[in-house]
Length: 102
Image (cartoon, one colour):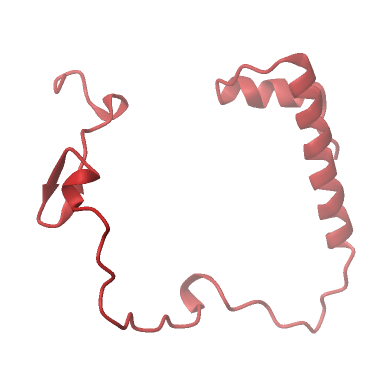
């Protein structure tokens, strides 16, 4: 199934992206290239091949962090407006505030 220019424009409108005609054509080509690769991969016979187990809940266990912490070149106060209990405190994004909080 190929992606059409109308599909790209529809997806862009859903994502509220403004695309030029040239960029829409470029994205259509890129998406169709990706779908072409997926078609090729779907042709590979994977019967008898064990599934990958290196991700998700069945991933390999992580090692314990070891060693002394590496000191920062500057204090934490230099990175953020405020530091609370060792964490950087930054202002809340306006897009995440409700009208009552503003």
